[in-house]
Figure (cartoon, rainbow, N blue to C red):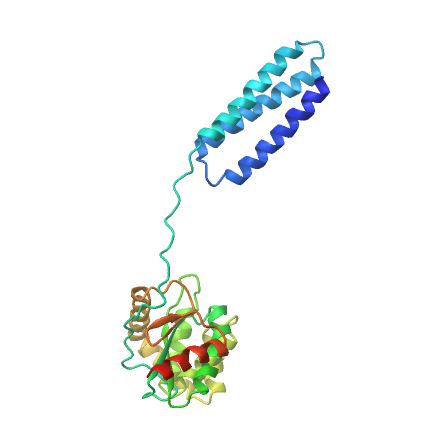
Length: 267
């Protein structure tokens, strides 16, 4: 009988341990501590039962059952800890106002359909999806234009400097060319790389470096303005793309063409 009960009790304890592991994120720490203490007492009873062969078996069984009942009661009375509120559902029909005055466009500036991407130039997903949007813009010459807003994430130390390198290249007419190079090589970024890219693009490297120095404060403010705009239009991560002011989840050329065709058909 001893061996049989010990087997059952051990199985029960293992089940309780698994339950605690699954529920640990929902039960407060104080309650978990009490549950663990109760389990420790049950284990001690099991150990004493296996050693003290002459002890009162019925008494030991009753004590173990009482402790296991106590653990069950704790779970029954446990209340989930407060959870952070769920983020609001995205409204993909909402039209946001995204100012484009002074923006650099890929595609004809007068094109009727505007796509805006909020990018972190060190973000691997920004690098992955940028070519998709480039291809979609190229498929609609004169009809679609594309602009970038800089949204450097705090944990990407080179995202803001990379954005400034793009702006410096833009002073010599190579804005998107520099951006494309940076995105294709965004695992190895730094000042030496930006200068290497500038040389590769045929820029005046001395002017490029001077522009970075002279405009550092102004471009920091511009990037901060883009970032604040992103927050205002509910950008929660990079990349986030908008077509005609509406967020889009399109991430393939076919999906983008479908959305663009629908807009053109309704014009």
